[in-house]
Length: 171
Image (cartoon, rainbow, N blue to C red; front, side, top):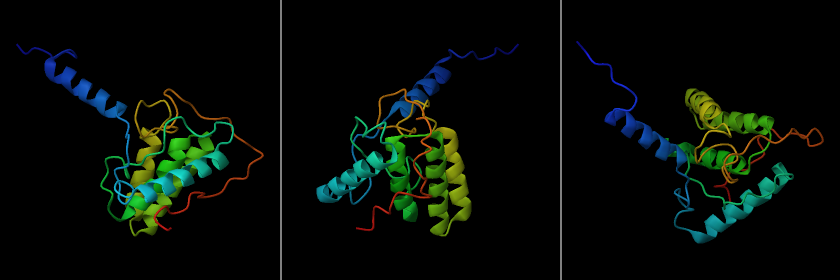
């Protein structure tokens, strides 16, 4: 006779604890070069992120948490790290559902422009699934604001830019 493993077994409980901690982790400092070791480059990026955020989501304002980037959030950075940093800025700010859709499409487009169209589609789809503002993760939409957050109401008076965040590595 075999015994069914229940959800409270030690391996399952340990796995659930690990996933809960991993999802809840928020980057508290830059982990991407040059921002990790170059204070001036980090300050320039943070100032630019604040400016973009004020333009992108004026009703929400600049997030309480300072802007930090971890590049591609657990995915190997490689040549597409600038795409991930660009994507982190609107994700830090938060905003409307449409702004999130546009930011995710811009990530896919940027990765594709670096010679990896299939990877761009994969990454774009991945952030659509895992980046919802109600997911308790450090990379969720609006991660600079207190959890839980949600989408802003659409702003019909503001025309949408297709990919509004400039390449942070081009200074």
